[in-house]
Image 1 (cartoon, one colour):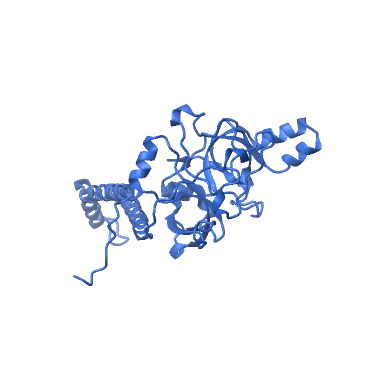
Image 2 (image 1 turned 90 degrees about the vertical axis):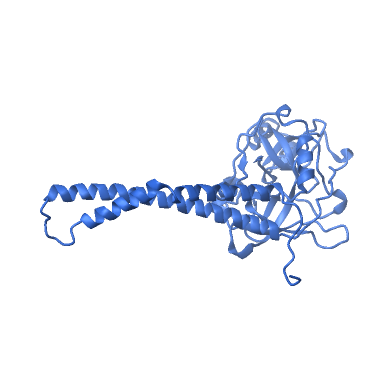
Length: 345
């Protein structure tokens, strides 16, 4: 027994419990369908019809009408069997997917819960001439953190285009971009202590979403990735690496991608005034919930209305005007390539 491999004793996270629950549910559906008496009856009926089918080109004594009747019954029975088999395959695929995600999550290296990240000092938050948010240069002293927000139903309208959190739905949403290539920037939801995460949700606190960089696709599985925090750790070591799944990632637009690429900003939706989005807070490496005050189109219209040279320089690139939650109603100009749909959590 001493040679047995050690098993992780850490408690299962809510994501792991959800994966197992979904897998168990799919297994239960498959078991019910597989053992259903109607399935066995359909297979038996088709086998009997096959025995009644002519073995050669000789017309049976019952005549053509009898052959036609057997043919129609065979088509009906085989179609029913095919539909049942396709449902079984779908349930099995779903089980394998959920178990694969669960294994990846359980095999991921244990890490401490991310330390609290505090927004940049208010003195740096511009009010008259906000700056454009862009992916930051690594600097531990300006790292942003989790923020306290009012209850969901008290802050702005609900998101109009939320990203789905289910892995299968995400693969469909991001399909043309998968697998994500090394170097691709993403919004990443790092693993959290389950108890702390539940307490934060109950207190109305926001989930942590940080800027990260894809370092590799694990085992050529479009669903699994290794990502790295671009900022160095406090001891000067390179940023932490995480094994994760597409469920915890949101690929952000890549301005350097070809115009016809699904990763190019033009392939992403433009959010209208009042939409709730996930955006990179200026001068930080954290994404937070924000309300759109003006879309890129609105900003261009305002630029045309103001023909001064300074205004032209400020809005020469595609930008949003946003109001972040719990930010004293300050308004910020944020580059559109670091603004994505609010995840449907």
